Amino acid sequence: MFRRSVRIGLDWSGTSVKAVRVVLSGGRARLSHAASGPARGEARAGMVLRNAGIRGRGADLRASLPEGEIHIREIDLPLAPGTDWASSLPFEMRRHAPLSAEVDWVLAHEVTRRDEEGGRLSVLAAIAPRKEAEESLAALERMGMHPRRLTAAPIAGIRHLLHDPALREERSCRALLDVGESGSWLVIRKEGSPLYCRRLRTGGNRLTNELMERAGIDREEAENVKRGEVPLARVRPEWREKAPTLIDLVRESALSLADETREAIDGFRRKHGPVRVLHLGGGGALLSGIDHLLGRRLALETHVVDPFESLELPPRWSEKERNLLRGQAARFLTAVGLTAWWEA
Image (cartoon, rainbow, N blue to C red; front, side, top):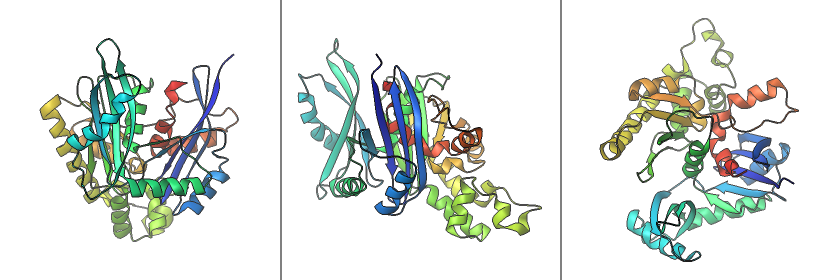
């Protein structure tokens, strides 16, 4: 008899929401529901989730920590009886991360490797301002969503890449650029090296703002065009015959993102060796041509992530529904990673 469980991954930034419901059974992970949309405020986010049929009751719900001042480290600790090792995490985070003494912090962590023979374990830990985390948690609970675990978005994303069998290249190194709204995360995981995690200033909002200015369109139109949901020629009919490419309309912001990414990758290379492949996730990865621009600028093989490749899609879905989801797949990376679907 197969054991069946339901997990929900909920990625809510305060202005947009992405969520998935995954059924785990018999070593298989099947997507049952997916929801995304603008969601400024909890009322709107709750409505988007309910309209998609995603409800927290009876599910193992895992949510992302709010964007903001998050510090992420991978910590190697001696293995202690039970969970005694966890008591040393706050001290270790303060030793490794530049934390202000004036801020009250909250810690989220998960064990990624346990070496019983060697007596060591590796822990991925994220620390965030307690006030922001508690406000986000309270808002989620008012929506009827009661998370069992809060995880930093870049941790969820990189763990998905590490476990995804659809990725066939060499597994010893994974690099992820998650292009979020207010900024981007670069995360690199290489065997034998500590997790490398850097917050970059350039994010999707800067791309959107440049597109609005250069194309003379409003924010909603720019977001729809950026995600590929609406052709540029539909909002600017006069460009129908000879429309500029999207990447040309956001070139300054895209080059800024590329330069920040290159600087961070160079910092990793100097200590830990080469990075050969870069994976792109987040809403900003949907911008047509950004993968090619980054690939050329960084001299790296660059791919946009499809986190649904290793999940079974609902058999009742039409080909049109499947294609619509695939077209938006990269923005669901955090939500899918939060479910830890590989534990099926």
